[in-house]
Length: 212
Image (cartoon, one colour):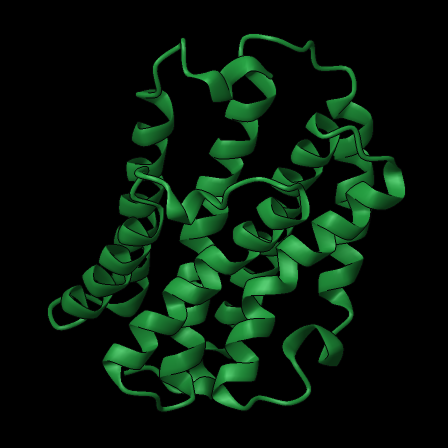
């Protein structure tokens, strides 16, 4: 498995991208819920760093990643504010804003799952533990976002949210036996993102969740 020195730059890049993506999803949700700019920014920060924070606490990494490097907060805050301003101009109805949220959330799930998995492997956790921590990193931020908005977390619903994360992590572990780690990461990412895209796309237009 990969060592921390080799994959530290890759983990950092993936985490920054995932932070940006999840900040967008949270900001869109903030707009949908009628949050003001401050509330939207707080929601975006919690969503963007929540999964990684829980992961670091579980593996005993201290201080947690975003306290060691302010890049993540510096990424989440401006993106949240820009998304808030743009999101207010999206027309309500037809599920446009919800679909946008869910598509960005799908990308964030895939990215953060892989970040959590790589971080756990670099910390020399067992394969099973790494897969579980990858899932926690991928789903926890979205759970915190939904809870702060007074919504039932997506992970508890029948939309394969956590299942896709777990399978994607397992796919990465298996494919690394035959392929390079970079290729395995790409395969796992594409699998998770496309599966979540399919779930979002296949939602019935009459779904009550698609009213905004």
